[in-house]
Length: 268
Image (cartoon, rainbow, N blue to C red; front, side, top):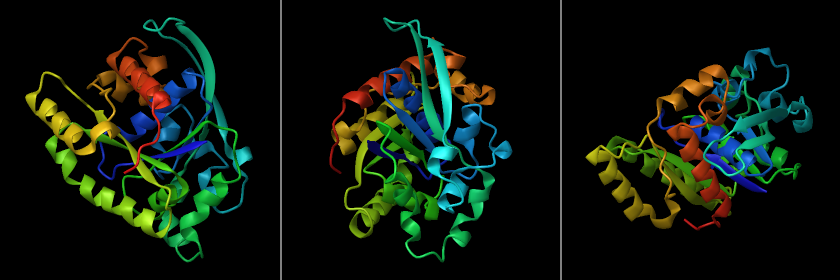
């Protein structure tokens, strides 16, 4: 079971969009998929059509040990027609562990608990039913993100193909290194995902060249092109494959899903 944190403390880079559509894409390729919404804003939860404010059991209750993970996970069916693949009609399902606003006080509520960095890891150690677990991290480096980094073996960073997006990544890399030294010796950065790419812009192309130069083969060859459908889909509670199956966003994330399924782990 590959455990992967999808993280970037900078907002607007496509972190939740990547978690949802890469996860759904792997599901459509036949992988058993669990998406964990670690963000108190519950954007991933709402993005797949689950109303977080109506739930009685969420990740918050699991971390508090007030609910079991098996009773909290929600199965989300997906039935799509993809005109660009050979077997275009695909029916499957993925699973989500939903979030809620209750998690917003996690730093204070769980801060005094011994082993507070391992709450999520202990929970995940009890399951083995999935091929992949994606954790959609909050846009901050607090206790919830620390829990995610302690629980996973791999990290994917969605990175907008603009120069300003490169500025904050050094702090994130430092955090990953600290976690590896002190809490989780197995964690590795195995994927950089270029998002919001526009081939017509020279700046975007130059940034992609710089990212490739620095990260080498950890940078996925599939770029996620700028596509308004990706921004619209969450408002309908749909993945991009359900909302606009023939869009650039659908094609790009499905291609990225194939890349991920073929890739072996790489060391940082």
